[in-house]
Amino acid sequence: MKKILIALLVVLVVLQFFQIDKTNPAVDESKDFLKTQNTPEEIASIIKTSCYDCHSNESKYPWYSNVQPAGWFLKDHIDEGRRELNFSTFTDYEVKRQDHKLEECIEYIEKDEMPLGSYTLVHREAALTEAQKNILIDYFKSVRTKLNYKE
Image (cartoon, rainbow, N blue to C red; front, side, top):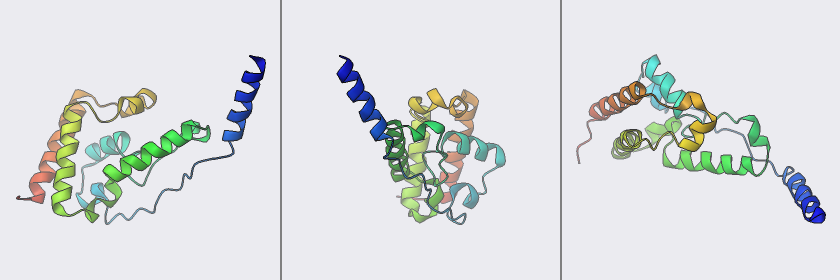
C-alpha cells in the first residue's frame, strides 16, 4: 500500500511539469459584444462576471489552474466555452448565428444551465439572482430585436 501511495505522489508531482497555456487571444474591441452593442454598464458588469471567464478572450485563470490535472480540465472547459460562444469575437459571426447564439443564451439562462453549477460553486459571485436573470434575458431579447434577423 505504501508503494502505491508513493507512486501516486510521484505521478502527481510529475504532472505539475505539464502546465497549460494561459495566454488569452488578443482582444479587438471592435468585435466585442459589449462594446459593439453599447451595453449599459450594469448589464455589462453582470455579463463580465458571469460569462466572460469562459466565453471571451478575457479569461482569468485562478490559482488552481497551476495544479494539474485541474488546470487541464479548466483549459478544456474554457476552450469549449469559447468554441460555443465567444463574446470577444461576436461580430465575426454572421447575423443569423448572432441571433441564434443570443437565443441560446436566453434559453440557457431560463433553464438555469448557465452559468454552469460547477463554475458558480467556486465563483459564487457569478451565480445569477432572479433579477439578474431577468435583466439578461430582457437585454438579449432586445439585442435580437435590434439585429432584426428574419428567417
